[in-house]
Image (tube, rainbow, N blue to C red):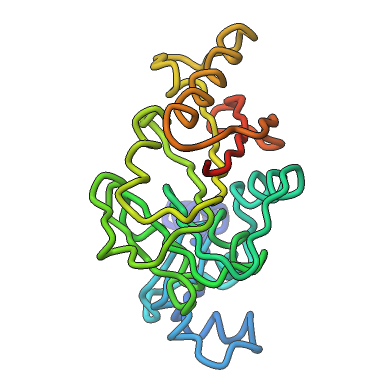
Length: 256
C-alpha cells in the first residue's frame, strides 16, 4: 500500500504543470535593450513618451515582462493626423511661419501635423490633463495649455495673434465653441479648420446616420462660423471615422 501511495504521489507531481516563471526587468533597462539608440531612457519614460502594451508608463523602475510591447509614443501615428493632413491637402491653408491655436489637442495629432507643416508655435488647448504626448510637451514650439476650457482662454495665456485655428472638441457644438475664439487675438485673414461631429452638433444621444441629419449638422457648423466674422470656403468628409464609427466632416473657414 505504501509503495502504491508513493507511486500515485509521484504520478501527480508529473502531471501537475509547473508554474511558468515570468522574467521581469526594470522598464528603463528593457527600453535601453529594445531601443539602444536612445541616449537617456529614463528621460524618455518620465516624459511620458513610452508605451508598454499600449499604455503609457512614466516610472523608470516599474517592472515589465521580457517580450512586452515597448514602443515610443512619438512613433505612434494618431488618428487626428490623418484627418488634418486630409484637410491641409484639400484646402488652400498654408501653415508655414504662422501661429496656431489647437483647440481640443488631446494627445496632439493636430499639433503634430501643424508643426510638420511649418507652424512657428502651437498653443495646444485641452480640458483634459496629461494627454499630450511627451515629445510634444518637450517641443519648444508647443505651449501646453492642458486642463483648460476654451472659455478660460484670454490674451494673457495666448499673447500672440493667432493665424491658424484647429478645432476638435466633443460634447461642445461649434455654435458654442466658435464665438469663444474671440477671447484671443485672431489675425485678419486667419484660417480655421474644424472637425464637425454631427452627434454633438445635433445634440443626439445616438450616432446620426441618415443623410438628412448629417447634412443638417454640417449646415449648423457652417452657420456657427458665418454668424461670426468667418467665411466658410469648403467642407469635406473626414477620411477617418470617429469613435464608434462616427461619420465626421472637416470644415475650412477664413476670417473676413
